[in-house]
Image (cartoon, rainbow, N blue to C red):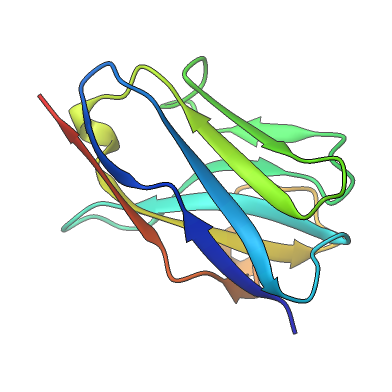
Length: 124
């Protein structure tokens, strides 16, 4: 069973950048699509970005398109979420999730493995 660990969260000022990483602490997610979701206080969890199991396609939420990018390294051991031009409304707990042979789409129910999350706080 794959276990996911997120890192890279923290406190950043408006307009700044952060890069989140999602790694497989146990196992490998070579055959898994990986997505990032976020949940702000008092709000429902929402899809942010996803990448297919083979790295061939990505999807971004409209709210982050043009500012965030998702990628995975050549060995498919880590998935990155590069976040630029951060805004206060990006403040949330960011979690990565894995979907075996998935396409990295926004349907939350497809993702059967979840990490614990990492806090991102954007201050104005």
